Length: 395
Ligand SMILES: *Cc1c(COP(=O)(O)O)cnc(C)c1O
Image (cartoon, rainbow, N blue to C red; front, side):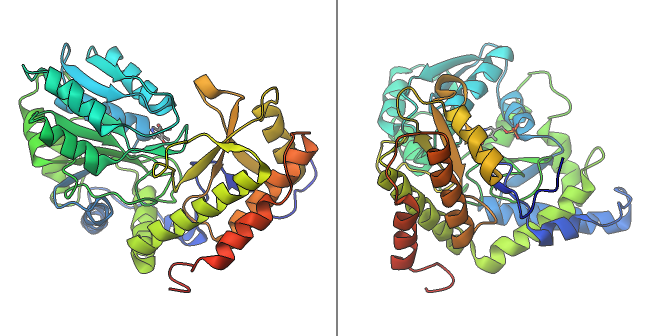
C-alpha cells in the first residue's frame, strides 16, 4: 500500500481523535500500582472525574469498554426478576435492554421511533401506573449515539418526582459526558455510565460509573451475584487512590491530562463549542437538501449528526467512497437504520476547520457516490461559523 498523505479524518461518534497532549501523557513508564506514587495518580483521576460528572458522590473507574460499565450499573442495583423501565431511543438503548434481559431483569421498553430523545411525560405515566412501586430503576440513554438525539435528563428526574416514584435514575452518558451538559448531582441521577473514547478524548479502554449514595445503599442490599463489577470493594480501596486489581495505569495518565485540558478550556466553553459545530453541521445538511434523523427540536445532539440517505441510495456505499477518495471515516447506520443513514461525529478534539474539512469530504463524496443533493452545504456551515461567536475565542 502506498503512503496516505495528510491526516485521517476520524469523524465517527467515538472513538474520537486523541489529542497529542493526551498521547504524550500516556507515553510514560508503567508504575507499581501498589506503590506510593500510584495513590497520587489514582486520587487525581478519581477526583478529576467527579468534576466532570459534577458530583461529590462516588465515581468508579473500570478497565473495560462502556459495555462493562453498563453491566456494572445493572448488576449492582438489580437482581433477577426485578422490573426496570427503559426507553427506546435507538440502538444503544436497545442493547442495554438486551443486556438487562440476559441478566434476568424484567425490562420494559417505552417504544420510540429513533428520531428523538426520551419523553419524560411517558415515563411519568408508566411510573404512575406502577402503584406498587415494583419498578426498581428507570434507564435512559443521554446522548443516543446511533441517532444523534439527546434525552432531557433533568426533566426525566422531574417526571419521576412528580409521579412520587422511588425508582433509581440510571443514565448512559457514554457519548454525552464531557461534550454536552451533564450534571449528576443537580439532576438527581443515581447511576451514570460513561466511557473513555468519546468526549473524554482518550483511546478506548476505561469506563465509569458515577454512583449516588442511594444507589450504593441499594447495591449493599442487593443479592445479585457479582464480583468484578462490585462497587463496594472498589469504593473502599479507591479512598486511598488504589484499585482492587491492576488498573489501566497509562489510561489514567491520559485521563488526568484530558481532564486538565477540559478545565483549561472550561466545561461551559467545551459544551458551547460542540453546540456551535453541531448547528453548523445541521446547516450543511439542510443546504444539501438532506434530512437530519433527529426531528425533535431541542433534542439535536451536540456530539454527532445523523443524516438520512435519499430513498434507494446506500449509506454504506457512500461511506466507502468517502473513505476511499477523501480518507474520512463516517459513522455507519446501526441495526434498524443500517445502510439508511450515516453519522458525522463532531466531538472532542475538533475545531472549525476540522469540521469544515470533514463536511467538504462529505459534500464531495455525495457527488462521487451519485447521491442526489444540492451543493452549498459547506458554504452554509461556514456562514454559520462566521456569524456566530466562537466560544473561548470571540466571546
Ligand atoms: C459507545 C456507546 C456504548 C458502548 O460503549 P463501548 O465502549 O463500545 O462498549 C454504549 N452506549 C452509548 C450511548 C455509546 O455511545
